Amino acid sequence: MNRATLTFAVLLALALPLSLLAGRVWIDPASTPNAALILGELRLPRALLAIIVGGGLGAAGAAMQGYLRNPLADPGLFGIAPGAALGAVVALWFGYTASAWLLPLFALIGAGGAMALLAAIAGRTGGIALFTLAGLMVASLAGALTALAISMAPNAFAMSEIVLWLNGALTDRSWREVWLAAPLVSLGILLLWRTGRSLDALTLGEPVARSLGIDTSRLLWLLILGIGLTVGASVAVAGIIGFVGLIVPHLVRPLTDRRPSQLIVPSALAGALLVLVADSVVRILPLVTELRLGIALSLLGAPFFLWLLLRMRKGLA
Amino acid sequence: MTLEARNLVLTERLAGISCSLQAGQITAICGPNGAGKSSLLQALAGLLEIDAGEVRLDGAALPSSPERARCVGYLPQSPEIAWDVSVRSIVELGRIPWRDAAVEPVEAALDALDLKGFEHRRAQTLSGGEQARVLLARVLAGEPGWILADEPLAALDLAHQAALVGHLRKAAQAGRGVVVVLHDLAVAMNHADRVLVLNEGRLAADGAPEEALSSALIGKVWGVETRWLGDAGRKALATS
Image (cartoon, rainbow over all chains, first blue to last red):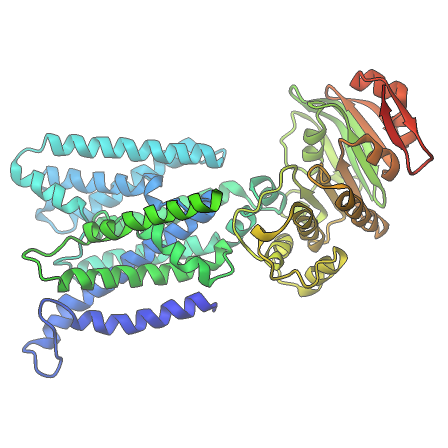
C-alpha cells in the first residue's frame, strides 16, 4: 500500500462518521429522536452512494489521464457520461420515472450505447487519437440530443425535472441506488485497476508499450468497459457530477511516484472523499433549497481547472 | 543467435529486404531520409504488420508478444516520457515483459549506464544525454537478446554520443545483438561491425563498413560527393 492510498483511506475513514452526523439537522445518536432510522435509512445510504460515485469517478479520471497521457483528460471526454445522461433524460421525457428502476436502467442503456459506439469506431485499431475523437463525437451527439429533448419537452414539469436532474445530486437516494451502483462501480474499478501495468508502459509512448508486449486493443477494451461501468453507473444514480475525475488525480499525483498504476486506487479513495465531503457541505449550507451537488462541484472544479491551466502555462513559459 | 529478415515488403516503404543479422555485433542501418530505415527496424522488432515476407529469430518465426518482448528491446526515434516519474521507475518498466519486479536486472542496468545515484531524479529534470542513458537502461533491464534502437544518437552532443556508443558496444560484447539506425555515417564507419545501406526501400549495400560506405556508394545513394579522411576507426567524412 503506498502513501497516497493510506492517506486517503484514513481521511475517508474519518470523514464517513462526520458526514453521517452532519446535515441541516445535526444528529446526536444519543438524544436525537429516531436517530437510528435517520442514520440507517437516509444518511448512511447517501454517504455510501457518495463514496461509490466519487470512487468510480476518481478511478475513471486517473485511468483516463494515464491512457491519454494528458493531465487535462476527464472521463466526460469519452462520451459515456453524456450518453448515460441522454438515457436518463429519455426516461424523464417519457415520464418513465413512475418506477424507480427505470431511470437508472435507461441511463445504463445510454452508457452502454455510448460504449458500443466508441468500441465500434475505435476498438479495432486501438489508436489513441481516433479514440479521443470518437469520444468527443459521441459526447457532442449525446449532448445535442439531450438539448433537443429539453427544448421539445412535453410540459414544463418534465423540462424542469430534466434540467434539475442533469445537475447531479444525492438527495433522497435510498439503499436501492446503493445496491444498483455498488456492484457495477466495483467491477469497473477492478477493471481499471487491471490496466495499471499497461498505462505505466504507455508512459514511454505507444510504440514502446507495444514493444514491451502490451496488447493495446485489450487495454482499450478494458478502459471502455471500466469507464463505462464506473461513469455509467454513477450518472445512473446521481446524475452528472463533473470535475471529480479531472481534479482528483491532480490531488493524488504529488503523493505518489506519478506512475499511472500508482494513481488508480488512491484516486478512487480521494474521489470518494471529495464527493462525500462536498455532499456533506451542500447539506450544511444555510440555503433555502439545497445546492445541487453537481453545481457545487463544478463551482469548485472550474476555478481549479483555470488554476491548473495557469500553472501549466507558467511551466511552459 | 541470428535475427533474419526474409523478403520484407511493406507498401511504399520496404520493397523486399532480406538480411541476416548476428548477435554480438553492432549493425548500423543507414540511408537517406525516407529510405525505410525506421520501417525496417520496426519490422524487425515485430511492431509493424508487414505485407509480405517474415522475420525469423534463431531460425524460427519471431514469437508473438509478450514472448517477443523478452527477446527484442526497442528504443524509438523520438523519446517520450509522459509523466514526471523517477529514473528508477522508468528503468523498472523494462521488466514489464517478465511480469516480475526483479531487482537485480534493474540494478545491473542502472550500473551499466552509470546511473547509480540518479535513481530518484525526476524525468523532467534530466538533460538529453541523461535521458538517452535512462531509456537505454530501460531496454537493458528487460535483458533482451536484441536491442533495436532508432537514431539513439540524434539529439546528443559529441561526448554523450561517444558514451552511448560505448554502452552499445558493451552490450554487443555481452553477446546481445545491437541494431541501430544511424544518420552520422562517420559513427557507422568507425563503430559498427556491419552496415546496411537502404535506398528507396531496397538494400543498396550490406557488409563491413569500409565496403558498404565507400565513397562511390555514398555518391550513388545520397547523391553527394564525399571523401573519407583519417585512419581506420577514426575516420571523418569530408564533403566536397
